[in-house]
Length: 65
Image: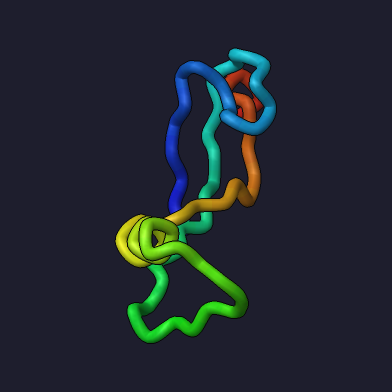
């Protein structure tokens, strides 16, 4: 997990209040991933080369002591 400062506010809250956001960063999918059903080559390419992130927590900067 990593912390980032978003001066425009937390992307999830969308309130515009500057916040420190904790993100869980996931590595790109392994090239050996098996897909169920029909998955386009374009989607497989997108999933294989881009990391993803999930918001774990946010703390408004004016609340931080």
